[in-house]
Image 1 (spheres, rainbow over the protein chains, first blue to last red):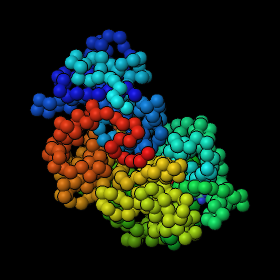
Image 2 (image 1 turned 90 degrees about the vertical axis):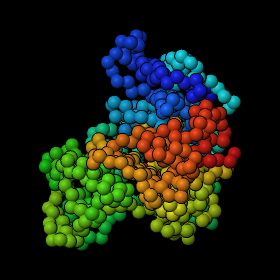
Image 3 (image 1 turned 180 degrees about the vertical axis):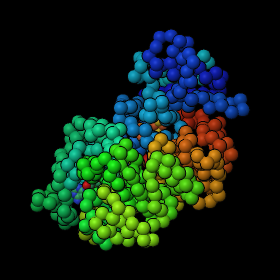
Image 4 (image 1 turned 45 degrees about the horizontal axis):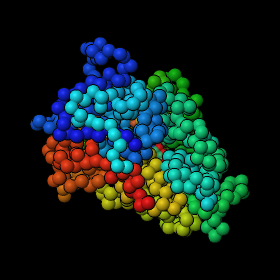
Length: 144
Length: 423
Ligand SMILES: Cc1cc2nc3c(=O)[nH]c(=O)nc-3n(C[C@H](O)[C@H](O)[C@H](O)COP(=O)(O)OP(=O)(O)OC[C@H]3O[C@@H](n4cnc5c(N)ncnc54)[C@H](O)[C@@H]3O)c2cc1C
Ligand code: SF4
Ligand code: SF4
């Protein structure tokens, strides 16, 4: 299965992936207009410290602890992709307590949010990958 | 192969999903005395609150049983197990034969032996959908609801009732709310927060008797009430195994393959006791993630794939009136502590390992702490000072990070965390 892989050597710490992620979920066509004056809450997050930076998003684990622990069944694995049914999620955050990568975060409306590889909004390559100017995030299959 | 599962809740679903990974044709029979499609038990308080409904409470989709080819016997109780004949005998005399049996019978609410309890009108326990429905029917405007127990279930019930125009009073033997998962200071923060939301507490008090619908406390206080909710704890349902001489303590004893002491009989979930690896103690961990993962492990082994689950730890994520608490592991060792009186963070560590933590408020990336406990990560392999302040992958070595974010994910060996299977 194709996944998002991150190589911190190439990460510029520009946070563009975060903006592309936030933009992807708006459904708008113009990025500048869509994100104007809002504080973005992206599903991919750049960690930064003393000159090191890298982006973190869901690994789509083959044995996903978030899915196994989800108290409502809102999180599911569909064709290898871990997705959330936001209508069923109750915001208990058990998945945040379970995910070893810190890849789940609260959203504005009480449900959680996480990377779903853009399957709900776009075809093909996830937007963070397309938006990364330095190839630090790639979408590929690696020897599975 | 004939699989029989007693119980139709989280552990049962974990088992069914695992069995069907390995065995597409074997027969699976599920027996449960609750008559519903599998639902999420923790959601019963959200149902009272109006934040969910019966449709959305379903833990799996409507086609779950047909897709996984399960035969259902709902509204039926498994009375006993005939080990010689390998059969489960139901309440109406029917018997169901098994090759592999899973007991996923969960737990039952404890009803304390308080004098006068039998005469109390409108009394309820709070662990099933039917409980929630009957409690809801008994409510009326300005009713006084007395909840016995300020633990997880009692307080979730209180929150569930909070939009109902009722007065909520909570009594607990302990001097602290959520005493099993919080320490003094964090408990005090939550108590304040709950009081701000109009829940009144009588803590460190005991109800010594009831005079009809008046509770008498050990210090001679009397609390009149209209509705009583008993939420003093749950007890594992062990009798099916105990009756046939299987090893039980407070819960059913299982090994790391979720086998009971009786051949071909497995057990998983709230009916069991298991090893808490953060303390090394055998205990009951009545929590949904553990129930799923034990059920899954049982299901793997029942369907012939050797699999162990040896990573159980107590872990709680609980939100009350918008404030989120996360706790995990055991509270021993040295501590790292931060608090501004509203938010709270305490990490417990010793011998180069993280043992446990309590977080209130800022719960971002808490799973990174949970993983340190679960994986017993040596703390000297990471920047502990940094991770105490902010949980993140930054605290790990560059190599570990490269592995975590760029490493090949092996579908077959499973992730390096959680359940491990030898296939
Ligand atoms: C109000 C409430 C809130 C909760 N909140 C949380 C939470 O936020 N997070 C969390 O992790 N956990 C929570 N829990 C705990 C969680 O619900 C349990 O850990 C989980 O449901 C355990 O699943 P189980 O499959 O082991 O057993 P159960 O869910 O208890 O199911 C066992 C089933 O077996 C049936 N059964 C038993 N004996 C027989 C028999 N002889 N014949 C036929 N059927 C039988 C029972 O009727 C029951 O339907 C909460 C529980 C309650 C009550
Ligand atoms: S959210 Fe976390 S645990 Fe779940 S699949 Fe993604 S990385 Fe794995
Ligand atoms: S917050 Fe939502 S998705 Fe996460 S465990 Fe709870 S119900 Fe499931």
